[in-house]
Length: 207
View 1 (cartoon, rainbow, N blue to C red):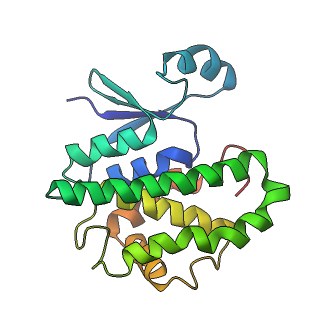
View 2 (spheres, rainbow, N blue to C red):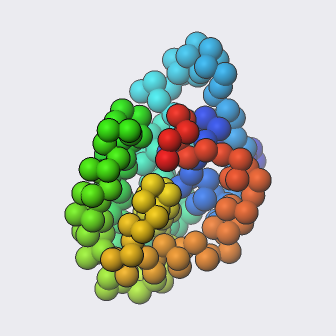
View 3 (cartoon, rainbow, N blue to C red):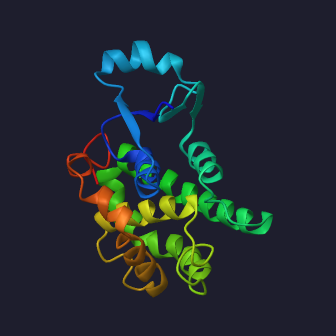
């Protein structure tokens, strides 16, 4: 059986939650860097359904859109809860992650110098809904077992801690949650890899 393949830039970006999920689940995968830019523009970009990556290749099946990939892997590796209600909760939180990640992406790539202070100032209002959702959970989004959405929420919190190191200080549930996920052996395995250490968070180096 061929290994899964991730096609993406050599950076954490929208592929990091996917990588961490695979490493922790013990799934071997290969990675293809779409760069240099000429190769991305002329070869890879036209192959992508929406002209964007990451791309996941699983045998003869190809899938783009990072959240679709996470959901696919959630179903494939039993990381989607045990009922339609649990799956819906995971989906809801993952959609919330995407909302904040979208705002973060606009800041990083379009308005970093002029907008960072205002973004950080408004961040508590963006994080509070996650705090409210997580404060009564035991462990992770659905309790004791990880879901695909946990990898995405963890990554979202992690990149924001780089942007604003004290942003979780007034959110004890989120701070505890981030620490709990960070300490998982599979997550540590990914974080301690040279591949992870060599990667920037974002393409332009701003974080």
